[in-house]
Image 1: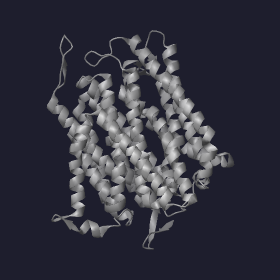
Image 2: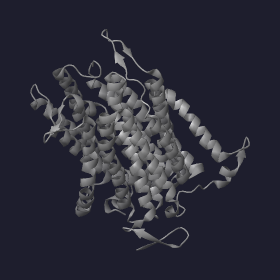
Image 3: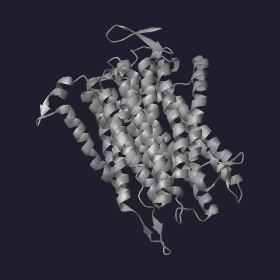
Image 4: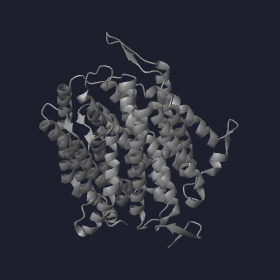
Length: 519
């Protein structure tokens, strides 16, 4: 099968898709390997090695994760207006390699005296915080732009677009699956530096993959403003000034990641500014149809905040629950707490083809996008319902592992109902001139949810001694309280979205039909 590129020369495809898709697939796979490998270890590294309290650890992860998903708004704008997607991705990859390798420096373990006083290696912690800031900058330039570049590989109306995003999404989860097995095993068996170091090596492979595959992108993702990039300011090319300023921004994030209140204020300002800009752009630049589509996308993005705030408990409260409350023995083999995270990625790899087939087979009965989002919210709520049931039937002992596995299964079904079609919806409902910005807003919504998730996780904070929860039953009641709240929240917001779904479908002006038909 042949495809016509922008210069009208034929291009051979691979499995029916542009070969550039598979460069992006493997780049994202390695980037997600590094990201999720580090993230799976993070709460344990903080609470067990540096002896952070549950609350402090959750809030730090929330601040870091919020910034990781908020900065793509800026990265998307810079790529749209100046660098182009390809150069932005390369710069982001370099920052990520440096940040993940910096995480490999662990310093000395914290100690707790008989009186409860904790002594920490503050130099090692500052290296850790600065490494996180480099990762924040790196993800800001890579994450939104590589997703946008996937969309650019397909011409408007190309019916391969949705399946292309599905394949790309599989790359994300293959990286996540491998990371939560390999990095967690290395970190818990040989030391934190090995787990974090492996994440850095993974990102290095991702960067090499992307750079080596430039020709297969066939000019996609290049800058539309090369004159500005070549022009000099203060004797330096503007392109290099962008790189320099972006690198220096890591100094700001270095301080912000240590200050939860500062992140909260920044998120509120960024969210308000983004919303105002969307309204301004819709009123001044768009006609009725395009305006309605942008409004529909904005409403859907708001509801994703609730979904991800519940879903992202996986790396804080659910991860600590697995470590402290769960009977982790499966077929006489003890599974590490962090390795349970691999079930999410495994279920996606197994279920994604089934969901794709199911949506097609449903034909005219295929739920519209808003209904799929509502189903996702109810499924993530039901996942916490499974954990509530598991705690209630466990008596005075630990909770059977099957309940956490069932929760991840339900959460994954919810994710498959929301995330792949959500990424595609952003590329189809966004006005072309602000596609990168709207993809950034999609991740800004995730940033808000990460921040909210850390606050929610603190409902189940447990007093610890040397990183260990001393009383099983008290800890179980704390997690029960949190999971019950999340169960009702997911169900309630799912029902609300279901009620208003006809309005959202109307605003989409037929794009919803295209999404369901895979066009």
